[in-house]
Image (tube, rainbow, N blue to C red; front, side, top):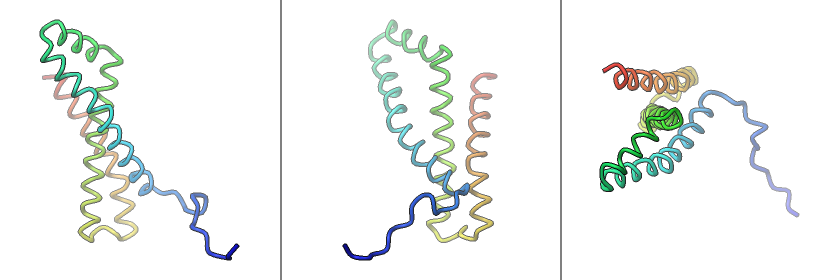
Length: 126
């Protein structure tokens, strides 16, 4: 067998906020695609199915478990959006300085949480 270099494994890399944000970006994107699409299609089918069907949908989504799903989806949306904006800035060539990258890696999920809280505050208190 040839002596060729091995790729660095996860144990070699020092974990940082930029790695967490990257992983969260992928997870939230997949969650939105799978769970969000399922809830959206269920909502459309419930609207097309009539008043009884929509009442069932609204009852389940208004339950505590349904609210957890909806809040989780909205958090995934806002977190994915903030991370996407961060990636867009990196794609145009800015923000690669270590301190800047670390700062925006910390701010990105915090903004996702704050936007989720603001979104639900508007819905609940309006």
